[in-house]
View (cartoon, chains in turn brown, green):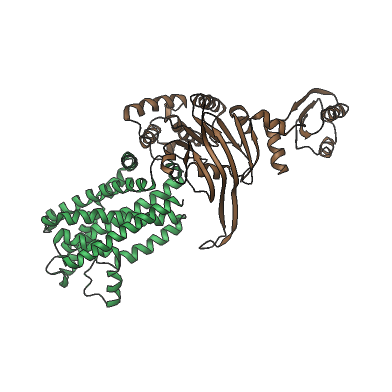
Amino acid sequence: MPGFALEIENLVKIYRARHGGLFGANAGEIRAVDGLSFTVPQGEIFGLLGPNGAGKTTLLKILSTLIQPTSGRARIEGIDVVAEPLEVRRRICTVIQETAVEMFLSVRDNLLTFARFHGIEKTEAHRRADRVIDLFGLGPEVDRKVQDLSGGFRRRVQVAKVFLVNTPVLFLDEFSTGMDPILKRSVMESLRAEAARGRTIVLTTQILSEAEELCDDILILHKGCQVARGDLNTLKLLSQGVYEIAVTFDVLPANTENEIAALHPLRSQISGTTIELALKAEEGEAIDIVGALAKKGRVLHVEIRGASLEDIFVELTQKK
Amino acid sequence: MSAISAMLYRESKIRATNVTFVFWDFCYPLFNLLVFGVGLTAAFGAPHSTAGFDYNSFFLAGVLGMASFAIASNSSWSFFMDRDNGIFYEMLTYPMSRAEYLLGKLVFNVFIAAAQAVLTIGIGAWALGIRLRFELFGVLAGAIVIGTAGWFFFYTILAVKIRRNDMFNSVTSALYFVFLFFSSMFYPLGPLPAALRLVAYANPLTWEIDLLRYGSIGLGDPHALVVEAGGFMAFVIVCFAYAVHSLNQE
């Protein structure tokens, strides 16, 4: 029976906002994390979602011992992040949001230096480095200094490092930034494999399809507070009555934009001759709307779907 | 211990990527001694209150003190580079304490300081005829280590607390002027005006240089040096504690 990798109790982080000027006069407080409580079982891929400024990165900073909470408790594998930060650091590996690499070292030396900090013996470090170099397609660049590589490759090096070590918990703050789709898919498969081995992966992302595909469990944050929590099906239940409608015409009918706006959709988009909208409605209403749209021109394609994670996210965070 | 050796490995790897850095690290105090020491000796001869020591001998401790100050200043710039590269924050999540992080960097700096000192003292003795007091080398070695430590921790506090490069530059330039010129680095303190002498005696760099001077050529009052050594140790401990605290506040 797996225990909890993360236990968060009434966690609060307040930043003091500062004005400009030489000493930065105090200008009030920002509650970046506001009374969060949740647990994450071991071996789970856990997604933290939220709009910019929701508190995701602050939460990861607290959990990875970069900053201390104002109040509340957070435990990683049963160890308190404030009382025993070093013990926590021995159990975690973190990909921070910003690119973090040793610019003046080669790709291989970046990996070997990181391995050394994690106490991996030299021969083993070389063996593991060769494996992740293959996994991340870094072979042709392995002896180049990282400062001479593109932003995407720098990010690869940064993310590759977490596959060198066997810490029980991984924190990934928007790990796929700058990665091409093929590499991203391969990394996502590797993350699933790591979770299957029992590692707990906590990730933040702005790419909701990524969370939809990867996460066993999702927490949606807004202004430092939890607005929803559960697996994808649970979240969809929270957002029952949200439909995504896509209608493609041979020629886009006139005045469509105003008519769509009058429906007060959660979001809408017109691209070419296709209208896409997500809206909260009864099932019959959704069908009526499609019927009304179909009378305006020759329809080539119609699609009605239940809510996607993106719709749920928009609805929950806007409602809040 | 493995965290400290990992940090030492990391610092060495980075420094080894630039031969200019390595050359300048090792030769900086020696060049100062050869240029300032030889020039001032030629211009003014032995200052009268240095009890018969020529200026090269007197200035040897000054350049070693200047070197520890410069190593600390250079190291503190690496905090800004690491911040820009993001690696600073990532490293703070590695399995090591903040104290180990600092001590790892310090050990690297002590190696640089020791190499500088061997080169400077060796060539100073051979080429400039500086007569060294070998029986006091324990004091000299101790002064090099604690001198390097004190200024490294002091500059770390500034680099962590001051987040803007331009502000940091202004502050360190001002400190460079105050600490170096209001100290016993370039001249004996005895003939100075009373106010300047008072400031110089309150300057930890003076305490370090007086220890280095005693350890290298035996010049100095051992009783006063005990007080200065105690003062400098207190400076090291306070700076270390505050540097760790500052990193914890990051």
